[in-house]
Image (cartoon, rainbow, N blue to C red; front, top):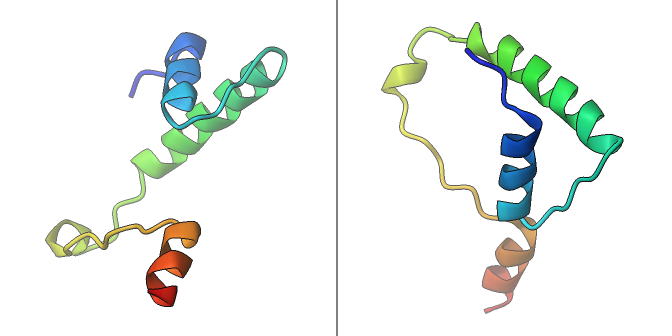
Length: 67
C-alpha cells in the first residue's frame, strides 16, 4: 500500500475539521502511514463476513439519549 502524502493527510484532516501544520504534519504523516502498514496485515478470520456497526460520536450519542 502506497504511503499517504503530506498533502493527502492535510486534506483528510481538513475534511474532518482538523488543521495540521508543520512540524506536526511530518510526525502525523509518519505515524499514520505506520499505522496503515500495521493494519494492512490485520485480517482475523471471518472479518469479511461481519456487518459493520454504525459509529455515533459521543456528543451525538448523549443528545439522542436525552431526547
